[in-house]
Length: 292
Ligand code: HXC
Ligand code: NAP
Image 1 (cartoon, rainbow, N blue to C red):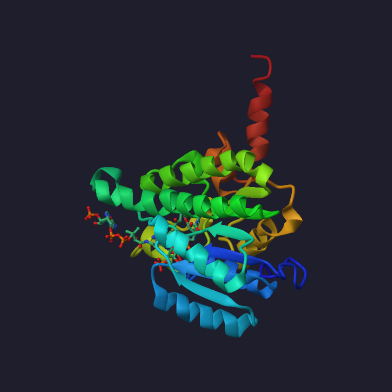
Image 2 (image 1 turned 90 degrees about the vertical axis):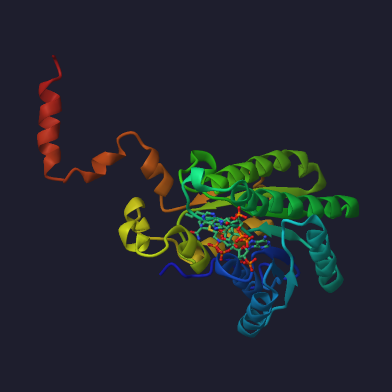
């Protein structure tokens, strides 16, 4: 029901996109859809064997062309190498999807300085490294148009306990998104972000809901639509934002979370728990106090 591809066939034909963290989880799902729409895709991460397996799987599934490149986004020279390999194979790059991330739950006071740095380095420094290297290239080449899409989370603006390094880093990525949307628009570079709510993946669930936390804290209960996201729903949005169909969208962060963060934020949202039958009584009580 929620797995219908959105864009028309060949909507991304001739495009080449680089997806960091494209070998697994949401990065793999978005890469799959880009390929189905006719794009070439470069997938990168630290684990080359995983990337190669994913590349083979996706080429067979979609008939598209996938280049796996080992790249730890924390290291600028590895990012430059990834860009060089993408250009060598495909001649140009039309878009960068900053999707790679590191995260785990922990009380902040239990974190070593290195643990905090590790998450900041993957998420914030990694997104900065990729954006800077690709942006410099596009500007130097005077490429007519290019796009950067950053995957953040809704706690980039609400903050969140127990994932403080991730929240801190994602907030930085969001600020970078909005800043560069203005500064680099003159070079034809659009910069946008997506803030997903819960979309089950092994990478996220192993680190955010280990053991029996999955049963204890059911994400679905926190979401007005009472379900988690389907990967295709996110892929549809990402394909649109990477494509030229969204040419006038710049500096936007699109939330795709079934209403989750607003449910947590609205002052009186706890009244969801009031049963329908009680509303007559409550209304009568309120009306009776009208003149007091
Ligand atoms: C406390 C921890 C820890 C833990 C690691 N560390 N795990 N500290 N609690 N659970 C500490 C280590 O002891 C070390 O510090 C430092 O962190 C670095 O750990 P390494 O294992 O050496 O790092 P590395 O191999 O680079 O692995 C990075 C990682 C790992 C972030 C720790 O989890 C990873 O590879 N993650 C990639 C994928 C991922 O996280 N996906 C989920 C994204 S989900 P010391 O001081 O001992 O040296 C997401 C969803 C958000 O972002 C929103 C959902 C709704
Ligand atoms: P995931 O499968 O664990 O994806 C993270 C990816 O990042 C992995 O492919 C990992 O590959 C790569 N990576 C980690 N460190 C890296 C590094 N230093 N250099 C290069 N690549 C690195 O988890 P996911 O759920 O799909 O998450 C994808 C994105 O969605 C992340 O930005 C995450 O914050 C965001 N997000 C997810 C959810 C959700 O519910 N799943 C919600 C909100 C936001 P290697 O281990 O091979 O390097």
